Structures are given as C-alpha cells and as structure tokens.
Length: 217
Image 1 (tube, helix red, strand yellow):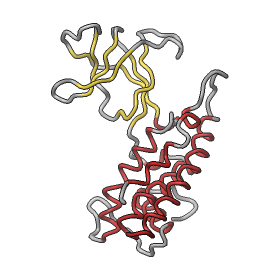
Image 2: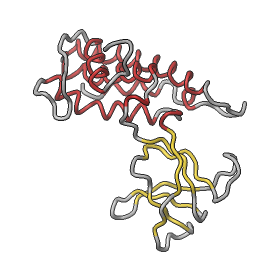
Image 3: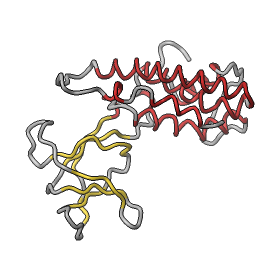
Image 4: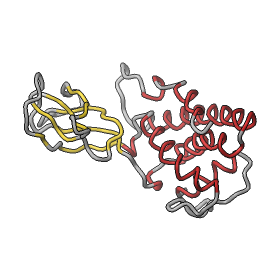
C-alpha cells in the first residue's frame, strides 16, 4: 500500500495477514480468489468491521434521517418506524423540529413478527441519528484502519495458524486491537464538542474487545 493512497479492503486484509506473519497476498475478496486466506478474510472482514463500528460513536459513520412510518397499533407506543437499512446502532431519536441534540425522544428498538427492524416512539415525523454500516474504506480514519486490521488478525489467527500458536496469536492481536481501538476512539471523540458530563463511548466500552478474539478459534 503506497503512503499516498487510502487503505482498501484488500490492504486491510493483507495488513492483518502480515501481522500474523503470513506472506500470502490476497488480491480479491468478492469473490475470494481461491486461497484459504481469502476465504477466511471474506468471511471475517465484515464481522470485524461492523463490530468495530458498533463499539463507538464514530463521526465518519454517524448519519441522520427522517424515519418511514409503519401503520398499525403498537400498544403503549404511538408510532413505529422502519429501521434504516444500513443502521448498526441507534444513537438518538428526535422529535420533529427539535432545536438541539438535548431534545431527544424516548424510543425502543425491536423487531416485528416478520423480522423487520423497527423503532417505537411517541413522536410523529421522528428523526434518527445512528451509526451506519460504512463499507467505503475511504471514510475510515488511519487509526480505525489500524484497529480494524488488528481485530481482523485476531479472527484470522485461529483458522490460519491453528492450534496453540493460533490461540496465542489471536489473544495478542485482540490486545493490540483493544489498544488501537482506544487510540482511534479517543482521537475521534476529540474532534467533537461534548458536555463535561458525557462519558465517551470509547471509555465505557474499554475492555470489551478482549473477548472478541474467540472468532476463528
């Protein structure tokens, strides 16, 4: 990967493999090129990416939009709205015409009987703020890329290295992912103004990544 380019999915996968000491170079994920490394990476890359996105209120992954209403009777809730198709995590729901981010509405995220995700609230014409599934790697910060490569490495260590060596490397990679996640989340949080009472997501989530290395064991 040249220093003047943005990391692609392939770059992130190959960085993860290099951290395992694997000399293989993956050239295609969708479809996988046929190597074992590509097969494993194609399976685990989306999991690692979405996991890291959900862990923090990333500025580059935050979206807002007006929700589409579902007609029906929803008990104690006055309205049900369709969950945005690219939503990973709902942050806030706002009443129509809310002047600032303090004017948040009560809501609950659930699924209908047919499995469709919905947001229940008592606000008409509600607006949502959420973490979106960002697949465009040009949106990722350099620190996010670094953390993602380490997390992916922790998932790949088991199936690629196997045995005790794979388990040991998975644990080490997960520890590195946790450290880089903290740095990436802190850098991201420093780029927005927050009230003194607010606890950044990266602090409240610290330590959660230590359990993520079970993937691929």
